[in-house]
Length: 231
Image (cartoon, one colour):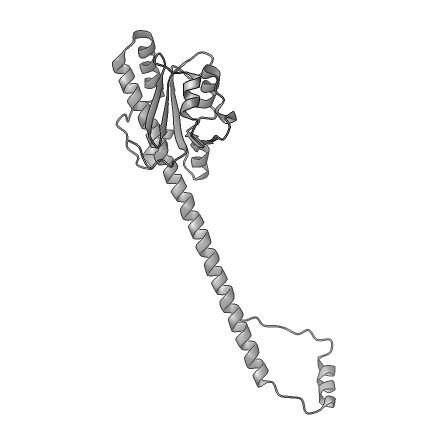
């Protein structure tokens, strides 16, 4: 399910048993990188050091609403401050999407962009219930569904990032194209102006006497000269 992942980038999403770090715990942390999907599961090796090692070769990590949710949980429960990690930049795609007119939760953005998922209909509420079933009952079937749900979260997050990135690249290309056209028009106008000046000089006659020049100067004294620019 790896989807055009740029080397040095990663997509991160967590699953929890609730909304507050004070009363809920992390059930898993999913990370999608160029080399595939990695899932750290509570009770199966989820820890701060393992997450740090997983992000060691990452330069940019993307989340959706991570600044207010994922990163707070990770700092509180795993002791990892992702924003403070050396050489690692965090980008919250929720705010990037908002600047592009795409608002709402991740699944709403997926629907707007026609991004499919097998677990359509599942929400954070269902994920929390599955997580509790795993932690409290050791339900491996619930864990399997939750892992798949998490993998689709990070995979579709990469598709959203690709969409907005290509949108930005198209806009930059349009801006550059507009500048080229503008410069071409200016150059054309300057060429016409110089051609006009050349014709005017060719048509101008040499004055017959200095007295006539003085007479012309006297008539035009005090008048403003109106200069017409070439179209």
